[in-house]
Amino acid sequence: MPEPELGDGVLIDVHAAGVSYPDLLLSRGQYQIKPDLPFTLGSEAAGVVREAANGSRFAPGDRVAAFAFGTFCELAQAGPAFTFRLPDELSFGEGAGLVMNYHTAHFALKRRAGLRSGETVLVHGAAGGVGTAALQVAGALGARTIATVSSEEKECVAREAGASEVVRSDGDWRDAVLEATGGRGADVVYDPVGGERFGESLRCLAPEGRLVVIGFTEGAIPKVAVNRLLFRNVSVVGAAWGHFAFERPDYLSEVGEDLERMVAAGHVRPIVGRRYPFERAADALRDLDERRAVGKLVLDVSDGAGPV
Image (cartoon, rainbow, N blue to C red):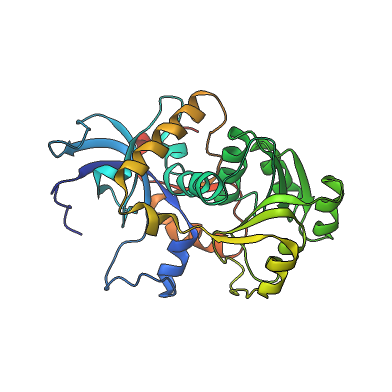
């Protein structure tokens, strides 16, 4: 592919690229965005600025993490609003999992769910990149966290991400959540899974609880009987970070600064799972599709990515 032009953005020599569920859907033509063929997958990258437009706040040599379209490449162009300084505490591999997952978690938990310190958050799919980000952001906001996972390996990852408690999704997880909360239920449910789990999640909400819809990795888009919301005084809240953030650069900057503070305080550090050579991107997508992913899957685009 030809090298991208600078335009009014930032050109980044990509060291590591994050692999996410939308990439899998894009590869099948099942995502809500359907770019013309041919196109490049990827939406997250970490690397070094090669060139930056005037007024972008960046300069050649800056370490950055960015959200952009087509980041499975050696040189990516990103908009200044979606480019963030990569804290010194984080490697390029960790930076590749920083923007989309952590901005989504911050948006969903703080802005959409109005999470308050001392509340309890139930996180589904808690061992993947999305789930571990939610656990860490919720913890940074002062919440108690309960993680649902499907294996011992994933339980270890969720605990590494800071889960206060872990329950198994292949068992009676709803009763386990109710027991862990003294029968009250969770104040917030963070749900990137959807499907059959959605209904059970509603049933384990505390009074005035909020179920935040992040996505539908199980495939099925659930429906809700609104009388359940009425009689139990609970809410279902949508959290589409991209649609909200694209038109609000000031908000993106504000969240970026808050996440930097969380990194500096030791609350946020992306958990990188398996790493793949650049030429094995398809293997990464297969592992994601077959639910073998733990932590954030990362492509090492250049030799400069370094150890996690």
